[in-house]
Amino acid sequence: MRDWWTQWLINLGWSQSLLLGTLDIVLVLALTYMILVIISERRTLWMVRGFIILMLASALSGRLGLPLLSFVLEKLVIGCAVAMAVALQSEFRRFLEQLGRGEFRQLFQPDRLAIPKSDSVIDEIVEAVKELSKNRIGALLIVETTGPIDERDFSVPGVKLNAEVSKELIQTIFQPKTLLHDGATLIRGSRIISSGIILPLSGRTASRQLGTRHRAAMGITERVENCICVVVSEETGSISLAERGTLNRPLTIRKLKESLEALLSPIVDREAVAPGLLSFVRQIGGKTRALVSRLLRLPSTASRDKK
Image (cartoon, rainbow, N blue to C red):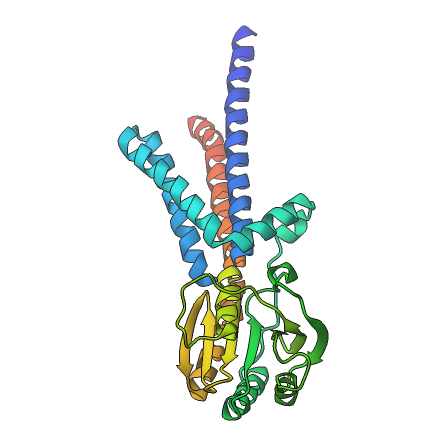
């Protein structure tokens, strides 16, 4: 009886250890999935994968008893975590806000935004920019890429429009005699959300040839990663495209269209990031169940062979 009780306690401890280890792995995978849902961009995803590899290498070096390597990797992980918090501050802020409001379901749901197709909305934007550049009318367009922009990132939100994108409307908004021509216009999907938006200016040292519109385009794309800005110079009519704080100029109409198609089209590639992790987890779960079932069958098979 005592031997049976001792064996039961040993099995209970082993089962508890296995359960806690499985729970630990599941929670880490869930946290990784939430991060991938929030990031949702391929280029930034490589940075997150590199950070995860560093963490795994740090944990593995600690288990293998390599103190010096473990110390270096641990400090490197801390430095990379701080750098990522600065580079992805808007994504982490949204994550903390959803976590604080208790919106746990939204944390596991990728944002799906209707990206404009190359043969419709992009053509309307390009045609409008072409006419504005030809007539040397200044313009600033904010185009969302992977998700909606928080209005708190703007200095002044502007006037709500919620109108269908058209070249005529864009040209009318930026006419010098209109009340909204000095601000920026926000485009989300196939809709013009608002106009007359005042944007924060970039703190970088810029060329004297760049006006307020160019510095505002650099400023908002530095602060928010899920948008690009198209700028038309009022003095020269030159066309510029701002992305992640970098200003590409001058651009031809053809180059502008190619850039917009390249930046706005791969929505399927972005949305496949998080579901790919789910399929990977399902594969691991299936292999784990198969391995456990084989282990459970071993004693019964051995007893049959003895008989």
